[in-house]
Amino acid sequence: MAKNPQDPDDDRQEQGTASEQTVSGRLSRRSFLSHLGAAGLATTASPLLASAAAAPAVQQEAQAEAMEGMIPVTLKVNGKQHQLRVDSRTTLLDCLRENLDLPGTKKGCDHGQCGACTVHVNGRRVNSCLSFAVMHPGDEITTIEGIGQPGHLHPVQAAFVEHDAYQCGYCTSGQIMSAVAVLKEPVGPADEDIKQAMYGNICRCGAYPNIIAAVQSARKRA
Ligand code: FES
Ligand code: FES
Image: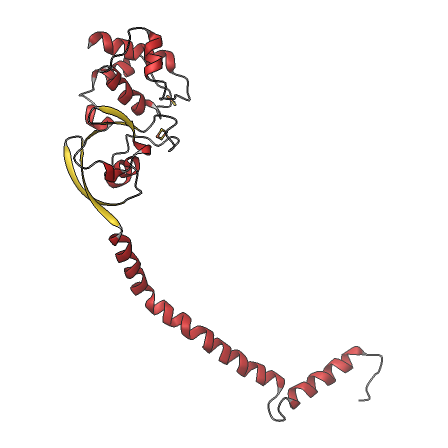
């Protein structure tokens, strides 16, 4: 059939036929590209297959290296000794919650601004988000789980229940831990004194009047 000069398809077909025939005189363009693709795939796939096979070894090596960076520490929490290996950057808060499965201590801000993470270290209240676990070998650490349990509530816990001193409860363990410490600190008798002593414990629900009433009640009983 004669070539139609007005039909662009005729040109493309012609060019396609020519290119398939003339690369290196013997290899068509299409088969040249097929070979190239197969070779490229083999070149790319070989390292991938090799790295897949090496992955477990690499992971084991990474784990071993990670473990090498871990620091052994013995923590005494709620009267019980725990031998641990922790990253030097692990906060006491994360260690209590993640390593020792003591979730009663809450993470609010993680920046020392809310008091939800309050625990006692050697009887003094501490924001556990601001302290590293490895700083406390030999210290007596007490969490909310250590001061009372259902059926055996600490007087401050009982006062919080009695005075309805919480709404969502997220700040409550920190409030109670602070209040227990306040009972042993030289804090004046007025409500304002308690407010001052517990200013680092924030309650987003605004249960402050009930919290103060609970602390005053527990103080009177103590
Ligand atoms: Fe520690 Fe807020 S979580 S002070
Ligand atoms: Fe909700 Fe205090 S009871 S934050």
